[in-house]
Length: 136
Image 1: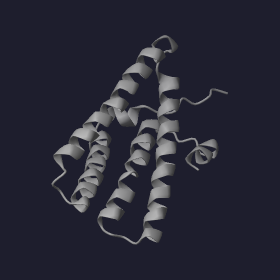
Image 2 (image 1 turned 90 degrees about the vertical axis):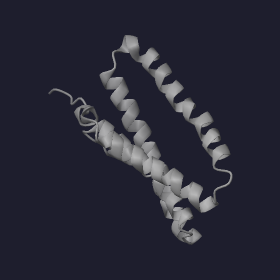
Image 3 (image 1 turned 60 degrees about the horizontal axis):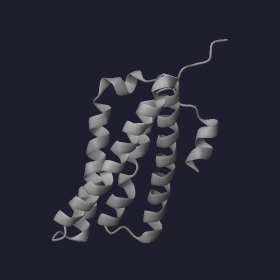
Image 4 (image 1 turned 180 degrees about the horizontal axis):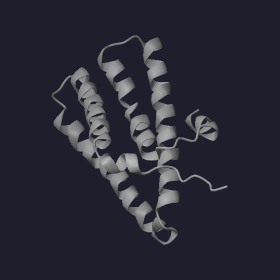
């Protein structure tokens, strides 16, 4: 669904949209932690999926427009390392949190996503990376 949204919507502030849209990943975690009924968790999960798709498209567009072609491979490699670094970090956090309740773990994860979103939005360069417009 998020990819379909991006076929029509072409946001100007690419990184701002990517950060905010990815922040939606906290919604289903927070909903499950607050023991919201499943029929109400599902829309949050769907919104998180749409947000993730929108974030991926906005990030890819920004990197393709702003990173010189000769450097795109290297930038993609650094991006991949950063993305994959989160996997063992997640395992480590899960191992350390084994004595926590499920609710505490879900709230902690939702909180980390929300905090990361807010912190990224505090970086001025996030607002400076905009879509390149076509010159007529």
